[in-house]
Length: 219
Image (cartoon, rainbow, N blue to C red; front, side, top):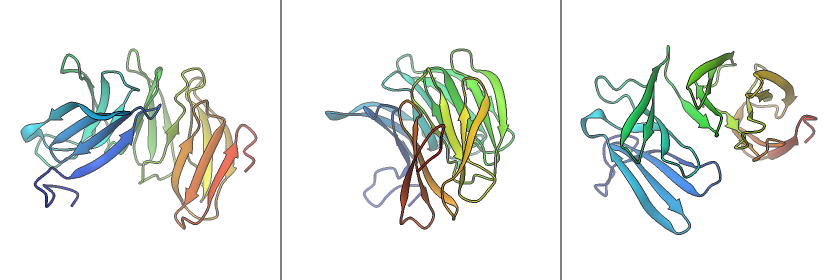
């Protein structure tokens, strides 16, 4: 089940993501979210949103207290168009941003926050949450985007307008660097190495994973 409660009586899981260095795991549920350390595996924090509903989009910043999340839109007033930044130590809202359409993904590193909408990407400076640039993207209902965890490069990849194509984008200097043809079919998954020099892609067919190097884009 993607909403309500699972058969075990525990809240249903709506999303799950590892932190940028895979040291932590963030899990969004029908009632809020939980944060875990991976080694050793242990629950470190819980946010129960009560009547505000579940969390469908969730991103941690490494193992820090900063969490970005978007509600599941199950309850009145809990719009999937609102992105919230939350401090888990002080248990306080840092800021709240509203967008023209639903936020279907969020990615962060130490200098950038990227809010992913179905047909555009908003690039923010993380320290001030100032909007730096808006990228018009191809239709991206899966919210596919990978951001390098290195603050020095802040490179990212997301689907281009051509079927199976990937754009390599510099989120630090705010311009596209390269486009490659990764697959003949539509993309289903993207992942980027820590420094942003390698990208792994898979198509909806799911039989092949390709690893490309940048800036050359050679598989």
